[in-house]
Amino acid sequence: MLLPDIEEQQQLLDYVREHTVDLDNAIAKALKEIDLIREYRTRLIADVVTGKLDVRGVDLAAYGDELAGLDEALADEEDVGEQALELVDEAEESVD
Figure 1 (tube, rainbow, N blue to C red):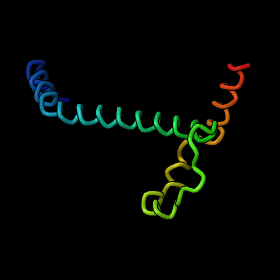
Figure 2 (tube, one colour):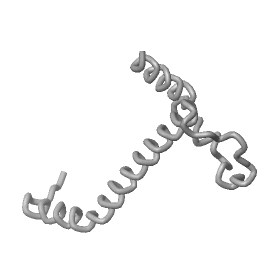
Figure 3 (tube, rainbow, N blue to C red):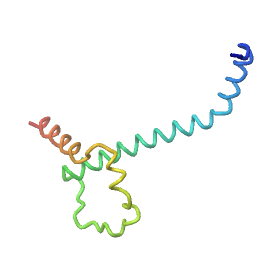
Figure 4 (spheres, helix red, strand yellow):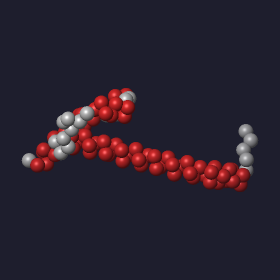
């Protein structure tokens, strides 16, 4: 098996690193945004379940396009209802 010498391997590695910095930064930014969205979702669910946010009377038909495919997206995630109930239980226990 032929291998380039160490100096050439280092040059190749430097070239790849130099030309993928933008991709690495974009990936890191996207992952951070995903984490923030998940955190927001968890907080939103907790606020609805605990009654801090009143969603009665919200017209879901106005959000039809935005809600399309939501079931499929949530199917891959943990059961958010159970998670929200656990948060409520923990909050109630800390109050007692």
